[in-house]
Length: 527
Figure 1: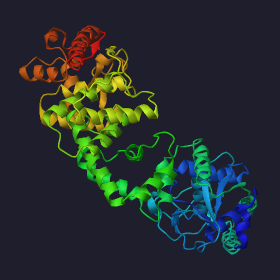
Figure 2: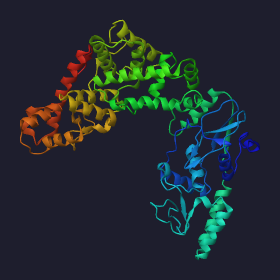
Figure 3: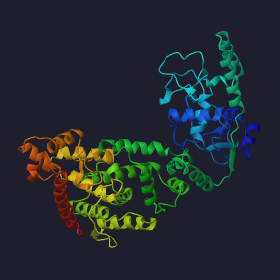
Figure 4: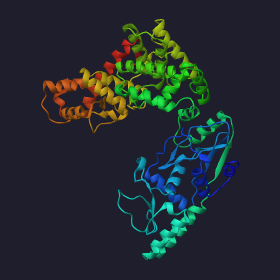
């Protein structure tokens, strides 16, 4: 197609030309890109920048004849029908999806109701807005917009613009009609740099895609792998199916990268360096159904085991690589785990957590740790890795992003003796992460581990009432305090006269609790 020469060399075409390329099917958006997710503010700010002639960045376009990627069939609320024929050169947008979708959808007329696909369209320009006011706007509900609100879709259509201007002048809005024409010219004359990437080397394309998108919101390599696998299997769909089956266990938010790394581990690929192309090559050699059936089965076994350790979801998992190691090791072990093997895995999990074993681990060591974990099960090897540090330091400052703090939070939850409540609280921690770890005293420090507690909202309210208000001590209150590791021998201090004294005593209690647990793992608490 003659228009495809637009993407042969670096060029700076007008916006209207770029939108026509999308409409004609000459510029495709591969669906390894994340879906459209810009909020109203970002969309309106982009349009404001264009109207003022301000730069909005370039578009990176990949030109290829050999590779055919699965692409979005919609852009905003609009369905795209055309696509290049087999054997013709295809142009894929590698960077600029959010911007291009905003521009295309805003400047194209739609008859769809507002809020379609969860995004509000159309976008208007308030021609009566004064200098300094926000002119780009969205209508609320189904209210009819004022006559001076110009839908942006009229600006690139001479006939629609003429009809809109005539309607304004018929109502006496002459200056607004002039402003509409000036704004239309601003959009028609706006130019966007196009940077072409002409290559059939998928490694070059993947590297370019990752580097460019690392400047903004990071992309996962599964986005590219999904597109490259389109003719064989929909990777995202298969991973979504696994997540859906894990949902009853609280693991529906498990990230794609865990599954991808488990597949890499299966084939001995470098966790960090192996890219989508290598992953695709291996997937192409095996029965897809069998691969994903085994992945689902071993992931469920791993999640079941982690649940027994108190990990109720992805956000309370100390290390993602612990789960990767468990998934691959349990894939290699077909027989059910007996009590001895579960105890060994339990020791391995907690020892590697407390020792920060997976922090900064190289790809080779990750693969070695998977082999070692398999040997723990198959050959009854010691569950403590030989190179694991034995001395464990106390937790001095709480930060849930740190593995040591996650271990502390998990231990707190595991002290709840009532099984139903304990499982609910574990699930809460696994789903909400740091948001589930509250302060015991609302006025106390959030950095102090002794002032931290994991409890459901109902339980937290009761607990704070017990320590902050003059509620007489009872058997129920004593049980509540003990449940959340608050010393019950400080009855005279409730309501507290000295928060610091209570926290000091609780700190000693929790330190002793953790120390005994760490010793039970065969490690040395340096408290």
